[in-house]
Image (cartoon, rainbow over all chains, first blue to last red; front, side, top):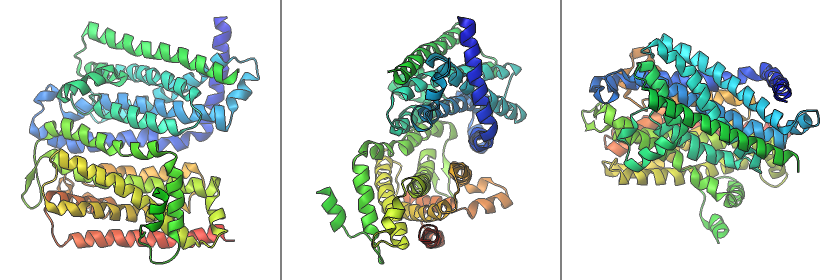
Length: 261
Length: 267
């Protein structure tokens, strides 16, 4: 049974890869260039002012080294959410390719696994390039920082699965603007990527701890600065995994309901 | 009642019937007012994040004329200018492209007594009214956070409308050349670097000579210079050049847009 599911999922992934081979150029700017420019403007430009002001509150590391792992995790989140909104609605509403897929022996669950596998591929490939650039800029302090890649993949999936679940329930795309405005952007700005969350008022600080992105930023940064502590790290990993597993369950359920009713 | 207000309030258009287009957009947005209202939060989130968080790391800045201000007061006017740009660009590119290619809205408008110039001015006026709402709210937040240091800030609102005008005109002109959604990568490719590098997050003096010059000729830089001068009260005569630049850009864009709309739709 599992073997069948994996095989079906693989076929789906093949489909997505074929599509991406034709459209990858369009994603170059948003997935590679923009995070790079952020790294340059914030890490190097603004960083020179932060460093001159003293980096005691950052634990003594340069601002570039402080934000680079955070930017990596944020990029993963943004790409994952982007790929889980309009493309999923397109499969259901505009191009309706999900309907053709389940007209074959594929089940809705296979369709969703294939979609998630492709999103994982997008997140991993983009973040790998970004990580290489960060390393070249001197943004990593320890080689352990390279483990930021699996962390980025994990937070990408932790965000992608629940957003896919929401996308299967929406009738039109105006809900996505809300996800970006009240989910992605605040997470990007307040999850400790740009400054320690301890500087926030207490109630926002708590919101940061709830957000999956904060856990990923912390993990990724601790790895890069080589300050990982076992139990908190394990807790963050488990928290992210829980988002992914529960999100996937709801996504499969949502898609099944929408396609077979 | 509100529709009546749209009809009665004198929309500042000298020639043509752009106000029908404004009224149409108003009626459409009345049904999705949540979208309208939520647009206000994005720049405020940026302001809070940078004002509360990053400002503590950076410390105070000294402006060109020797005034020392906190980082939040330095960066807030730049956020105001950038959000005026982003809003105008979004309205005048994605929205217009959709209406032109998919909704075929302008085909139906031009079947009425409306002319291309009316469509262009109407759409831009709408974008400006919407942008002015967001900018006014943003200035209010700045006031509450203590980031406004001068009465000159009263001019910050008209300045943000001017920024909107420049980018809405240019954006509309660009949109008439777009072939498909893929071309919109170019929109991001022009606005994003400006947002990050137009003296928004740190003073332009930070850059070496050649790059500094490159920054100073970008349109967003003109807007940031205007807004920062008004909210910090460091006003000088050179601001007239910044303002003229934006007026010229918007007017040229509008002219090109209405010419191209006529060409594309009235064949």
